[in-house]
Image (cartoon, rainbow, N blue to C red; front, side):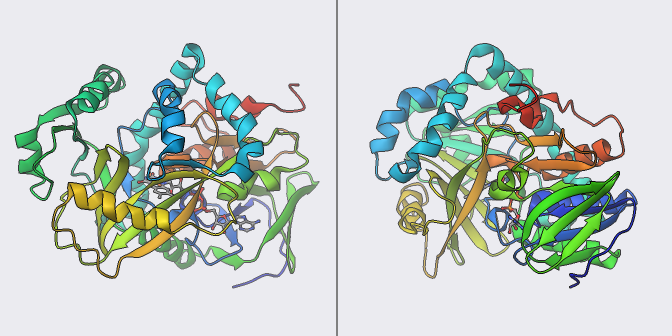
Amino acid sequence: MQTSASAISNDVIVIGAGIVGLSIALQLKLDGYKVTVVDQSPAMQGCSAGNAGYLSQANIFPPATSDLLLKLPKLLLDKEGPLVIKPSYLGKMMPWSLRAVSALRSAPYAVNVNALSSLITRSQESLALLAAQANASHLLSTEGGLIVYRTEEAFKAKQKSIPVWRDYGVEVETLTRQKTLEMEPALARDITGAIHFTHSGRCSNPQGLGLLYLEQLKRSGARFVQDRVKNARQIGIDQWEITLSSSRLKSSKVVLCAGHASDELLNGYGYRKALVSERGYHLMIPAPRVQLNRPVVFGEPYFAATPMVHGLRLAGTAEFCAADSPPDMKRSLMLRGLAEKYLPGLNSDDAQPWMGVRPALPDGLPAIGKVEQGIGFYYAFGHGHNGLMTSAITARCVSALIAEREPPVDLKPFDLKRFGHTFCD
Ligand SMILES: Cc1cc2nc3c(=O)[nH]c(=O)nc-3n(C[C@H](O)[C@H](O)[C@H](O)COP(=O)(O)OP(=O)(O)OC[C@H]3O[C@@H](n4cnc5c(N)ncnc54)[C@H](O)[C@@H]3O)c2cc1C
């Protein structure tokens, strides 16, 4: 660990050692940059540590949909439901919700689906390439993924999206009850059927993936500095100074990937604050005694189960509240009761609860771009439900931006200015 100041041209400081920051750091290292990663905690302790590991081709739709809006009052009243908004967070949620609703109008919605799918459909290939560079290929696989339904009504309703998925090149089919049970014999007999995303994949140890990236970074000469970043400011042409709690770092370029805390570090750069904390929970079951062969999302109520190196991980919930308020681990433990209905015989002895803070932007798209004021300041955050899936393609985009190459996807829809900026107001 090193915290002393340095000034080397053409080097990059990456703020945040979650999966987004470490992917960008590794991609930049591979592209020949001198890289320093800074995080206030040891690497991979934030949201990236405990996600569901699902590489879901289904997620081309932003999570806020008009359908969800109609069900909102019922969902908020349901104590065991997947959605919670804490009253103390309503003030912050109000502008966010208005923006989310505005993004549902048909024109912006179509643009957003197009933009998100441009990332999602290129994600797994990028992940596989990056993981291979860190000897982490064994953690990725592509067995497909299912959304399983209990009622005919919900199953039929979801099938309406199949033509749209297909329009965007997502390989999808419906499965009868019998076929679903052949593929996943551990499921309860009273399911109706499933939607099968044949090319979806899985990471069997999301935290392990990031830690292998870090190992590879260190092996190839990158530095990891553990300290809190207070601010970043430009001090000369192509020179940035990062103030830490106990020292300063200098570099020619900075990439901000601080997850849900990112917009605080953009104070003073003219952006309207748009990020909220959408907390999610998992329950890690070490010896489940039932086996799933691929990630399974349960449609009613909505949560997921993924087979992992360390057991079966149940994950779900969108809890909008202050990132630092105490976790409500009841929400994690509730997943056990829900899963027992779908997975008879599930043994949840020694299950471990966990909470993580998704960085959520109202339109469901991440923010990937470069800061208007100042040359050499880039950002990549707000990946919401898809941060693992889209980490490596984001890294390729940021690397292209820094090198002034054409990025692999059109980055206009991901520009943070879309929520307002003093230059545009
Ligand atoms: C229950 C759950 C299930 C999920 N399932 C999936 C899934 O199946 N597939 C998928 O693709 N995504 C999933 N996600 C989403 C995914 O985990 C996130 O999108 C992703 O982890 C975000 O990564 P990040 O690097 O932006 O943030 P983080 O992992 O939170 O990393 C940000 C880092 O920045 C650091 N930091 C913050 N402020 C500072 C500062 N001032 N100074 C220094 N360091 C700082 C933090 O310490 C942290 O390490 C899930 C999320 C949850 C909660």
